[in-house]
Structure formats: structure tokens, C-alpha cells
Length: 83
Image 1 (cartoon, rainbow, N blue to C red):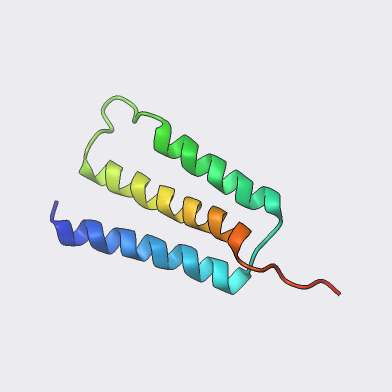
Image 2 (cartoon, rainbow, N blue to C red; image 1 turned 180 degrees about the horizontal axis):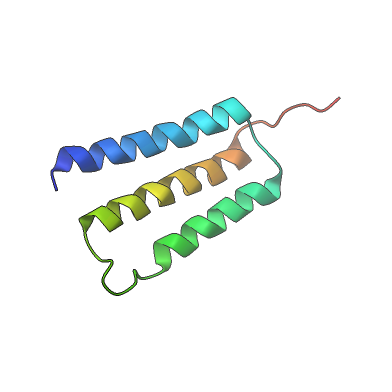
């Protein structure tokens, strides 16, 4: 797999997470905690037998990045003011 595809996939994943964070703002804390937990679970779980390969690694890495950036960003971004 060409290096340009890897960089492109991770840049798109990062942009998607930041867009979701900016468009929807910060949600309830438990959603962001759940996203961080899912990202860590996805990143630390070994792939099933027969699923190893660059495409699987790219898909899991991109999903991990989206979940982790959105989860951590929810704690750093200001939440909406409720009236």
C-alpha cells in the first residue's frame, strides 16, 4: 500500500473527528468517555485470524483516530450553554 493512502486516510479521519466536534459541539461526558473506551478497546484488541493485512490496519487505525480525537476533544471543547 502506498504511503500517500495511509496519510490521506489518517488526515480524513482527523478532519472528520474535528468536523463532528465543531459541528455538534461537546455532548454529554459519558458519550466521550464511551468513545475513548471504544477507541482503546479497538486499538488494544488483536485482529481476528485471517483479518490481518494493510487494509484492515488502515480501517482500524482510522476508526481509532476518529473515536479518540472526538472523545478527548469533547473534554477540551466548550459545551453548549443550556438556558
